[in-house]
Amino acid sequence: MTLHISRTRRAVALSAGLATATALALLPGTASAVSTAGGLVRAKAAQTAGPELSYIVNVRPEQGGSDRIQRAIADAGGSVVQAYDRIGVIVAHSADAGFAAAIRKVKGVDSAGATRTAPLPAQSTTDVGTPKNLTAADLKAAGAKAAAGEDPLEPLQWDLKAIKADKAHEKTLGSSKVTVGVIDTGVDDTHPDIAPNFDRAKSVSCITGKPDTTQGAWRPFATGGSPHGTHVAGEIAGAKNGVGITGVAPGVKVAAIKVSTQGGSFFYTEAVVCGFMWAAEHHIDVTNNSYYTDPWYFNCTNDPDQKALVEAITRASRYAESQGTVNVAAAGNENYDLASDSITDPSSPNDSTPGSRVINPRECLDIPTELPGVVTVASTGAKGMKSSFSNYGFGVIDIAAPGGDSTTYQPPQAPATSGLILGPVPGGGWAYMAGTSMATPHVVGVAALLKSEHPHASAWQIKALLALQADRTPCNTPYDIDADGKPDAVCQGPNAYNGFYGAGITDALNAVTQ
Image (cartoon, rainbow, N blue to C red; front, side, top):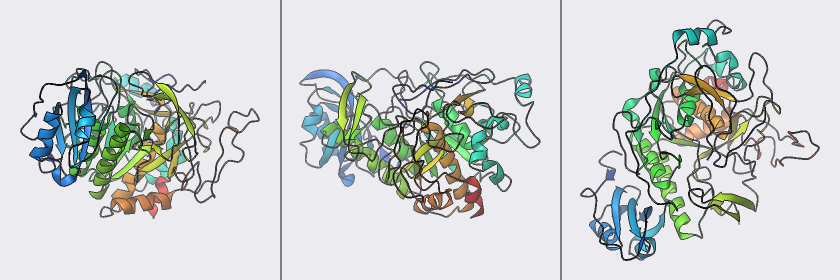
């Protein structure tokens, strides 16, 4: 099988799906904490006409909802959509081309910038899919080879055995008091593998930067939607119920936090900030972040717009962690060394006209992946080596987990037939995907098991336990995964912590026996 990587990055293109599913590719608070001051603050007429864009305005937290700042936004030609007072982040819209420059001059504003380079489209929050579930006959046929105690498709999940999740399940499936938030493209909560563990009360759509709890708003869009979030949710908490696959932590709850736009599936800053704030205020224990924040693959802090985006998501993710949430993110699928001095980014901005630029990844950040406190996950294949596509970097990668790879490079042992990761997709089916997107849910599932075992542990303590339970994995030297005689990546660091695997490959059995 030839492995393809699409332009946008987080999941790698797939093999054929199972049953009725067709595998698709995707790469790229509460009222006390969140306010919409007086509804929408109407803007004055724009002085310099331009496309309507969304902006982030970062202010001193104590002034986040002040009338003065919001009046200044209106005076600069903007309208307030949402104010996150506890972190001092305001989401605003404006069609004034000079809005950002004007608002940066206002006393109390730390930074401000456009979250996109394309105009705001009309968005629907009600165009959600109505899934169709698999028939009993389909499930029976798919599970013909399953052993006693296994879900029908579990024999195809080589990744569970790779992290000893099957052995961990003999001890515990995880606690229903633990909730994982899937910050992603939406989750099909009617899927038979997800429905038993789905938490509707903690699910939301954040695509506008303002929480929308309308029934079903958290589901993937029916038009221009994506199976990505459903697949991720199943990998984490697919129920062990005699149906389909089994998740890493099949006894915990999973909530959908939809942050991707309709059509293009862009993950913009205002939505990501909303997602982290929702997680913080709704007692979400772990978040899965298998995306990068569009439109910039890397956000350079010497650019005023990009600097504002980094600051806003940093504030939001740090606030979530301060409330007990462990944030886990995918490292990316370009085989980049994120610890190098120079990377060529050919894809930014990806919502208009991309251009090629050379950046220093130590100064230009992939967010939320490289933010302080976020657990960064690299991907491994069925042979336990770094996946051919996985980004890496000494001091950047915290931990590794199975995310799949080309079967040509890393074939699994029978009865598994694909080197990719099997998971549910909208409509009641299952499909294979690969990427650091698929590695991250394995670490999130283990973090959920750790939280189940240590319910009073802080986010910092769960992160420390994640590193302790990992199986130390040495560098592959040389790393020539395609066997052409040339190294495909260079691993740096000692066996105990290195650029390919960080602290090692996550181990679910260790997590429940510590």
